[in-house]
Length: 465
Ligand code: F0G
Image (spheres, rainbow, N blue to C red):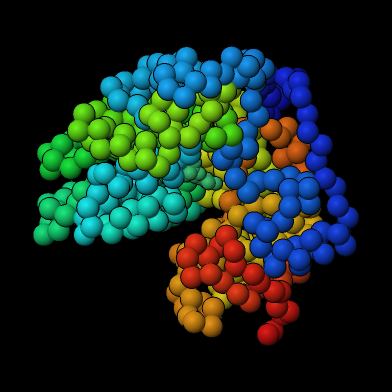
């Protein structure tokens, strides 16, 4: 028998399970209305499939849980710290490692010591908390995505790259002296989960060295970036994902990493550094705000889970199966008539809601509308990445400048959902795609001035109003 698609087996089976909720249509309508039509306000027990984030939502392994029992909770110099430290040092090659409880804590500590007010931080794309932490120290965050990223449908393999020509112009231009940091996000979460090539990392590293600007990685998804390099960049076909990840870290002067993603654990993060003085400054800040430098806000059992997670996440069999599962979901969704940002990444798929719902103008937030419909129809929770999140509003909360695209992110937790769960997501979307005009738009009722999408409240708007 010739099979169209070979099944790719995950290298594990399920040992502990957690029940999920099945609300009926009336209960879902009441739940989302009470949540002000903002999925962030829903309770977890009102959700059937939760694709809001891949952060801290993965399943741990029996080996991780066994190791957690060995957690050494000594205040300083715990055995668990040394296990974590040695694993991170081996992976990254950096001489200085500082633990933090999650990525944004690392950003705050690092930028507080590295950036000065008035300086500029350049990136392929800053994640939202990263952007906020750059601006909180009085510096400016500027994104320089490569031009290929603007075409959502093109199959270019490395649409997460930084625009090298723009970077060179910025570094050599009149404001070049103000650039205090170049930060590469791997993979590029703000731009469709697209990877960054090793060639782009190497060229960025050389440019930064020439202009004497520190080059750091925001490496929250270092393992999936390594897998996509392995499969898409011919030079690295024979390299293991772990070796590719280490080589990527070696191009940079340091890194800030949320381990809630590729650490395969619910909490955690670290800062990796080469510079002794910068390490001393960050360490002082860390001790004052996060915890002593051998635990950084983490418990010993967290450090143990992370030390194992960092090994498990670079297992080629795990990465191959995860990539295949996401690609399969993308294919099912595309076959149902819903476009996704191409090519499919690993940790998330981005639905092109603007194209699916042309009857909704950006003022009616088509991405948000599609997200609400997925909850109303299937109890599926996801996040908008469109004008609600990125557009500018006037004082009456009316949209002034729309976002360039109206997207919805389906983030896929690690080792949590089976392909059957994901088929259900595709089937729910297929039903919407059969009659997209039934999807209503929304208007904002109230919104906070900062990080709007987390706390905004909305109401549905019937057609024509
Ligand atoms: N950098 C990137 C690229 C991220 O995606 C995130 C978090 C962070 C930094 C911050 O890390 O959450 O540990 O403080 N992303 C999550 C998401 C929240 O859903 O994409 P954190």
